[in-house]
Image (tube, rainbow, N blue to C red; front, top):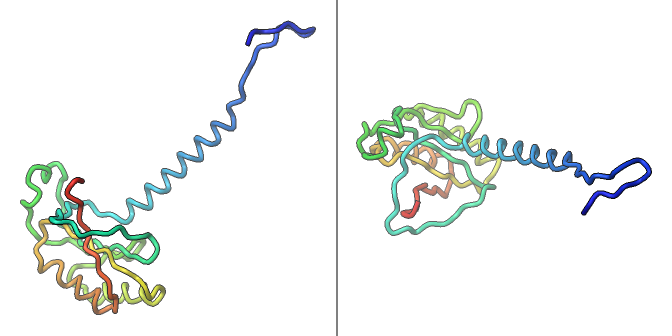
Length: 163
């Protein structure tokens, strides 16, 4: 397209990019919100591997994530030797939001929080995330609290071998 000459002078083509900038800003805001929602559910830990994997993907609707968090560690220090860890849990996080962290010994508090969630949603399923190096005696009371809350389905979260 070349410029044409009119009575007012030469015409140069131009493009209005204001709507494009609006769309880009909306996308940035969307991804920032999604990132915050996903990061609120997770506690940094090394999950166990599955062999052979008998897994299924779960939806987002009828579930609550329960994290059994390990004692503080640096991810760099655990990269080469993921199971070299004290095996003790620091806290249990039930879902998201304020008041969702409990001591591992506070099975009554964990049970009460899960029971309240189950009353609001009778088909509630629990996704239990625990660090691969935690000792079983740190995870067992949490599983007992889930059962005491009347929740029938507990799914253990692990990475697939190719991840």
